[in-house]
Length: 73
Image (cartoon, rainbow, N blue to C red):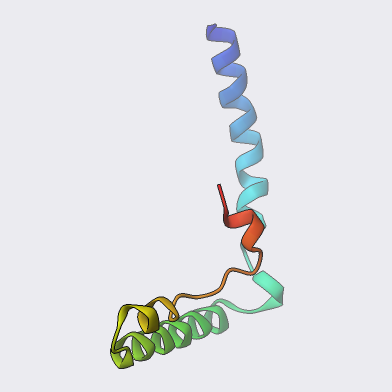
């Protein structure tokens, strides 16, 4: 049991840096560009929610997922 846990921990330590590198620069964009894009999306959602007059309009403010099948459990 202990050997299995230590093997799992070692595997996670080897895989973690590889997973972290995937998210360094999405689509070749710099950090500042990604940050500005996210802030613009947040501003758009805030404006949409502020202008909503009922729940249906507020639900329509939710961002659409790129792959809806992957988001479902």
